[in-house]
Image (cartoon, rainbow, N blue to C red; front, side):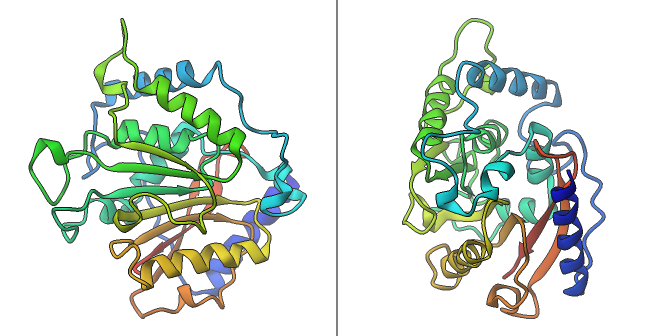
Length: 285
């Protein structure tokens, strides 16, 4: 708890130092009254039940035989965790995320895509896919274009394997399973690899999320380099938003100084560590 409090205070101080005023968002408990309204609020409990049913028989991914030190440092084992279901809804409810996924500037041939760098066992991507798979594409009224694609990229093979098992189970229906909580084929993808590598649908990425609390300063800088590269080398031309949980905030990085339009705000997301974990929201970088 003491380490997390120090982290939270450091992020808050960095945001204040950057003279960026965060929005005092009234994040609702459910996805209501927004462009990302996807399923009736009565189905939210069904989504949670579905996730519990799918993930309960699988490992939690908190410990792996390959260790976490490869991706950061020894503190990574302590810091590994995940967004809780309410945290995922808070993430998707952020105005910057909604503007990016529902932008009318996305061309008709593009399917807006949410990408999770370091997706672990895939829970964030799994829940986001369930919530977003019925969202009408802003660029087309065709039913075949409905949905927002979700992609998770995970380096550790054991966590990736859990995500793939969950994906297979999530696409199966059955007695008593509402159609709204069955993953539609093609809308949820997992990749075993590094976020430095090429990944499917990179050209369609609109939002990147990364829980990088286990990253040291070097890897944090490399994460920002990668996001900056995707946007400014036109690999992800529609990328407008990144939501990042970081241990430190290198304000000298070019991503924070690309133009006068860049927006850096802070928000709180519910995680397995604590109810309010600070996150940085980058937009128009």
